[in-house]
Amino acid sequence: MIDEKKIKEGVKLLLEGIGEDIDREGLKDTPDRIARMYTEIFAGYEDDASTHLSKRFHVDNNDIVLEKNIVFYSTCEHHMMPFYGVAHIAYIPNNEVVGISKLARTLEVYARRLQIQEKLTDEVADSIFSELNAKGVMVVIEAEHMCMTMRGIKKPGSKTVTMSCRGLFEKEEYKNRFFDLLRI
Image (tube, rainbow, N blue to C red; front, top):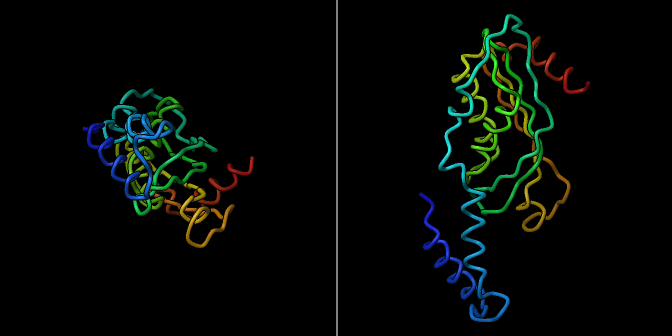
């Protein structure tokens, strides 16, 4: 799906557009490097979160499962600049769980696509909620956006926090338990 040839052509046009000499030594291999980088950082277009959530294990305990401080990197669709931070993902099983790495893998599938943080938060929550038939899911993402740090308002260190709740986590009692677990 990713077309490295088109990416290389686009990078050359961009370099020319900002007044660079695309034949100078330091830039000769830049289109190729960027094409390979985009293939890596946008790999989410060729991945499906459901494959990571398909292997499940039976459990009798249906209490909250929380994976916190999952570091991620994504790219904003508005300026094509990075945003990065941590995600906290919790779910209440319905007699089945997945390996804990699968929550991080699900986040990675969606983080490796152009998008906005609000959509990323919802996609992760919706995927886990539907694929696991979970009783509840809650996702909180805290991120710094380079479009606010490097350009525009130029406010480094500012964080955007988004939250998505599904099922039982829509109730205050479960939200409070989630935030209590984050403090541990």
